Amino acid sequence: MEGSGRFRRHPLPWMPFGNTISLRPGADRVSEMFVHLGPFTLIKVLDAYVGGHGITKFLRTADVGDEIDQGSLHPMLVETLMFPSSWSRIPGFAWEKVDEASARMLVPFQAGTEAAIVRFDEHTGFPSGYEAPRFKGIGGPKVDWRIDLRDWWRFGSAIAPRRIVVTWADDPGPWLKMRIAKITTGQDVTEPLARARAAIVAASRKQIG
Image (cartoon, rainbow, N blue to C red; front, side):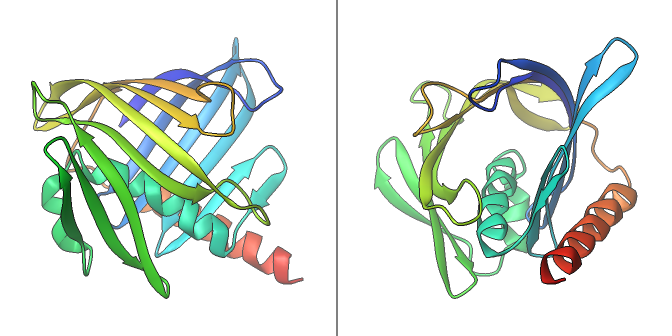
C-alpha cells in the first residue's frame, strides 16, 4: 500500500509524510514513513510487526519488547479488515457480536487474548472504526487507540478505505491522517520484511547489551 498524509508527535507540529506499507495480511506488516524537505529525507519512521515481534523506530530511537509487540500487532489487525481471507492465517481468530453495528475481534496473543471493537457503517456495511487499548511505548500503561476508516474504494482486486485517521485517547486530537493512493497485490515483500526483521534483531541485541 502506498499513501501520504501528515502526522505529529506532541508537542511537535504536523509533518507531511509519504508511506509504503508492505503486508502479508494476517501475519506480517512493515510500514516505512518518510518526511521529505525537497530532495532531502529529514525523518524515517519504521513501524513493523514481523514474526510475532514489533519495532518502532523514530529518529535514533528503536523500541522493541513485549509492549511494542502488543502495540504493533493492532495496526496489522486493522489491515486484515481489508483482506478478510487473511483471518484464516491467525490461529484462534474469532468474532463476537456486540450489537447491530459493532463486533469484538478476538486474537490469542502471548499469554492472553487481544480484543478490539470493530464498528461498521450502517449504510455500506464496511468497517468504519477500530478501537483497542494498546501500549503507546515502553514502561507506560495501555492507552485507548482508535482508527477511523473512511471512504472505502476499490484498488484493483482490493477494497480499502481511501482515508485513515488515527487518534490516541490521551492526545488532544488525531496524531495521523493518511490517504491511501495505491494498493498492489501479489508483490514480493521479502526485502522489506527482511529489513524489518534485521532491525528488530539489532535493537533487541542493543537492548540486552
